[in-house]
Image (tube, rainbow, N blue to C red; front, side):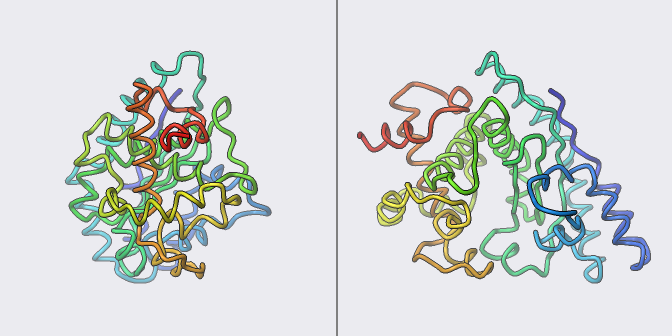
Length: 293
């Protein structure tokens, strides 16, 4: 298993300094190594359009602001820190799961769009996805809290990637349960905390609600809900859901992350396992154990 963190600092700097007419082609070339992330989508995916839709840095404005943000990431040694953390994390995960064969993984760190109100507001400058085997993308704005969490964010996504890789848990978008999604976030946070401690390991949007019983009691009865298209409000909360035109359900930002952490912490305490050992633990078993069923 080889993890490759792409040198997007060089590529993004080149794009932002290029003539506006040349930027789309340069961006497309930078994104080509993670085309496999969209292999389950129909047709030929336009990578530049996906970049725009996922709050990637703009091509037609804010050049100076984005170039300065890139220098902030470079000064924080973000790419080397990410590579080092991922290499160590994969060693921990594979040692805890003998016999599991992990895929090679390509990791893309992308600067976010400072004009995206959802990214910069409710999402706290962070949007990452590691659920497609072999591909991880991390889109962020370098708020100090996000720069400090570079390693924790990366290993959170690595846990997702190996959980849902061949030989692990099967994620069927139509039949997957909300419980699987919530538990997977709790496990990934628990793994980040295992390696980097609670201060850095929690996903920031879930922290305010970790002990909120009202949030817990509202989400838990819905854990059997199926179809990932139904999950956004339950996992990420109303503000983020509404940004994408999804009906709110009366939950604060990060609600599902908070609930997932509570469920997983109870399960790990009951079984004596680490989050690394629980990489492929059955979400239904985790929920049943945590709820005393």
